[in-house]
Length: 408
Image 1 (cartoon, rainbow, N blue to C red):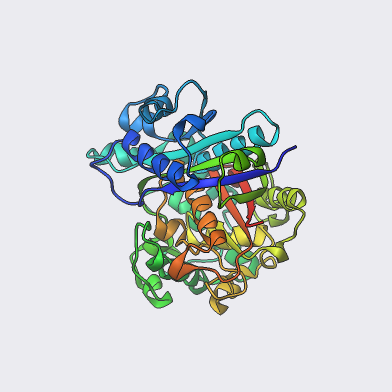
Image 2 (cartoon, one colour; image 1 turned 120 degrees about the horizontal axis):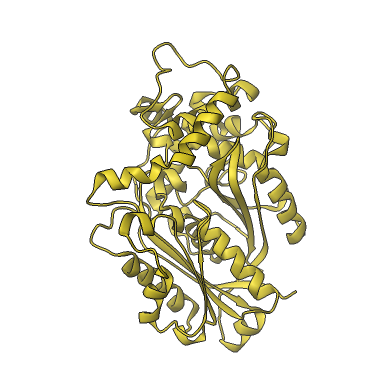
């Protein structure tokens, strides 16, 4: 098995891009990734395109990656289209890692792109009302009935979306199990909104206090709007290479990919956090990388809701079970803290264009490990971890992906 490196990364600003097509967003991030690596399109021998909703929102259901990439000169290569819900881009990245590591490719372009904003609001919101998603959310609410921390009087009305009710139930289950508080969840959101002030690609760049997060409009208790990922457009890309290609192409700032691990979720009791899918995936990634959680200097994790960040950092072993909420209040996961998490701003502030999210995490980790993150730089960053979840099935993520990168 060969060593694998990220040679270059690119990313558009996340936010609203009604004036751009999927292809235009893709081409923007890919051009930037190629330029960052210092290579031309002709060296790419494999291309992986990740996306979730393009067929539904734009009506473009056939070879979307090829349509976007051939105008850049990326042609005559093996091309793969990946869909794994919110983990689509990371699954593409893991495929690239596997192909390069096994010697089946030398230079792989991975790009994830999503446009969720639309001139047709009904179409935009229908993406989040898929029957299977709603059914799984309803099943989760039934499975956790009677096990949740009680909502304050008048705050227990259902939201307009069963998925958000399920996210809120996940938060309330963790609260009931470990004593996590609504204020601690708000502290996570405040941290990420404050981090994003220094990220020029972030959808939101306004610092928030914990009190401001709590006072914001309620979605489903205990979650307020700033605790939930927004609708976003955007694209992110990476060039993944073998060590031989790094030398041959004279790439001067590669970042090593130490491990990629991904698995689907499984049936378990809702509050059996010891068997959470991310816990097993992370254990496999740490073993592959030859490190443990104590070696990690920073992380990017999937915070579709801010309570989700708490669950994931505990599953990654970055703190003890039940320690995520108190740690957030202490500042353990803020820049300058023990192990900064989501210095990019995370999904709640940087944005969450589903098919691009995982590669946006890789973009941030590469910037951090190179020392290029400016006002949000984590001092001395040497080893970084990313956790990206895809979909919801049963009582946990449909897919969990963990990637470990290092600067040497």
